[in-house]
Image (tube, rainbow over all chains, first blue to last red; front, side, top):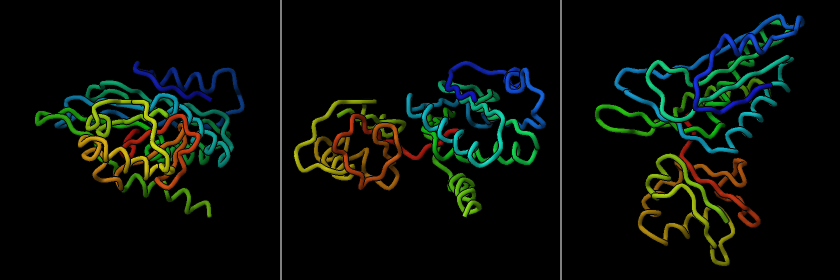
Length: 149
Length: 83
């Protein structure tokens, strides 16, 4: 498993290649790449809680492995100032069959958004503003708890 | 103990971290925040809406009723917005 919090960009293809390198037992890989949306936002700055962020991401990864038969997981989140169009987050999952890989990737993103200590600040022509947490993100994460019970 | 603040909470308080020694009788996160609010107006301003504030004790999510005894690091922050 790979969990990284970094300022630098990443290459999704390289990460996917690394996830399955040297193996012939993986049947499916699913990845999600989140990008900074432009529009009226000229720059997005990501703040995080060093130490706790990594622990939270590792915990989410463990939780995903407990739920699905995963052969590999990669989570990368960037911090610092990011321009519109820049890659901001990447999750990838590997499993013998696609259903587990799809579901686990979605689960990882839903939990990352509500559990990992990152905060976004947007710069716009009218000034800078902290992004508010979205209720829909909380609902997306809680459906996994409901489905489990 | 060490207090950490993030995002707009950090901006309103003016520092990202500080060491504090709460007086006796401050036993929970809620009491800690109420005590901070009495110190200076910037804390009162920062903690005006505690419903919008989350807490972690020693890097684990906690709530406002959690005891703070023995905590090395308490972080206060707005709801997270990563991803």
